[in-house]
Image 1: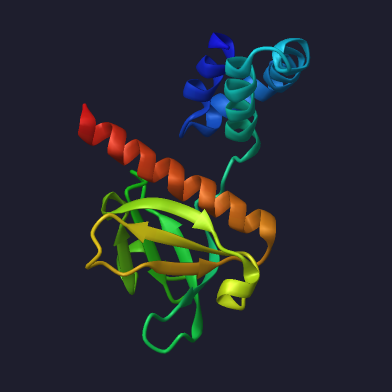
Image 2 (image 1 turned 90 degrees about the vertical axis):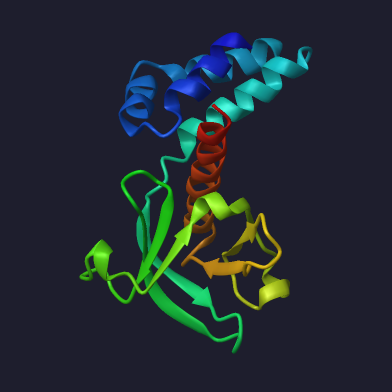
Length: 170
């Protein structure tokens, strides 16, 4: 349990640690722990699954997304990237635009949750939304070009939101 929790912490927001853990056999060690103890110890199962998720989703923090307009419900293509501190989601017209040329900036500290949406709900595959803390802020609906890309974005954004919240609590 504690070993899996340590791997989650080491892998969090650190691509170099994720690579080092994977190359040192960390994934295999977690799977072995789950096989040996996951069926009888809920804590091992929980931390083991969290460790695998943390290691498996080395999420890219930039790429093409589609944003749904809150007023027209039309989708527009944009290039999205997280800033270097992973606190702001920047949306620009194309990959060639510099981060300072972003047409929209979303302060992730104003959001509490990033989660996937069912296709029938938004009429688009691989969609997800950012849910604000304050009801006066808009829900931001985005979509990726595939289910796994969507999950990588959801993981990256939720991880960033969680770490911003952790930083504020300290």
